[in-house]
Amino acid sequence: MEIVDRSPDEYLDSIGDEKIRSQMRELDALVAGAMPARRRVLWEGVFWGGTQQSIVGYGDIVQPRPSGESVEWFLVGLARQRRHFSLYVNAVADGAYLGQQYADRLGRAKVGAASVTFSRVTGVDLDVLQEMLGRADQLTPPDRPRS
Image (tube, rainbow, N blue to C red; front, side, top):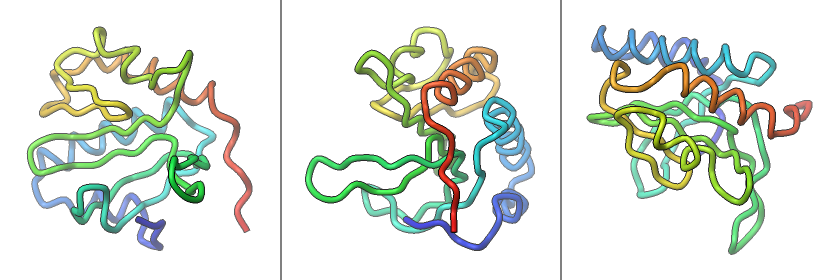
C-alpha cells in the first residue's frame, strides 16, 4: 500500500451507498477530532491478505517488521470492508495494542491485534472509541515533517 494523491474526502465522497458514506464520514470526523494535529491521507493498494483497499490514514509511524526493513505506516487507519468497518490502531501501551486494552468497553466490536471491526457505528461506544484514539495520539511521537 502507498499514499496516493487522491484526498480522503474524494474517497469518502465516492462511496455509493449513502448510509455507508454517512457512517464513514462520522467515523472520519471522530478520528480526526481525537487526533487533530495528525496528518490525514489516503492509502491505496493491496493490503495484507491480498485484497485491494482504500484506507484513510491518520498520523504516520515507522513500524518495525520482524523480517525485513521497517515500513512507513499510519497510526490509525479507517476502512470500509464488504460487510464491516475497520479501524486499525497501531499504538501499543504496556506491551499490548490499545484495541485489545479497550476491547471490553467498545461495545459490539471484534478486536484483533491492531484491528477493531464492527458492522454498525451504532453498536460501538463512540466515547470509548474516541478515548482510545486520544490515547493512541498521546502515546505516539508527533508526525515527522514530509519533504
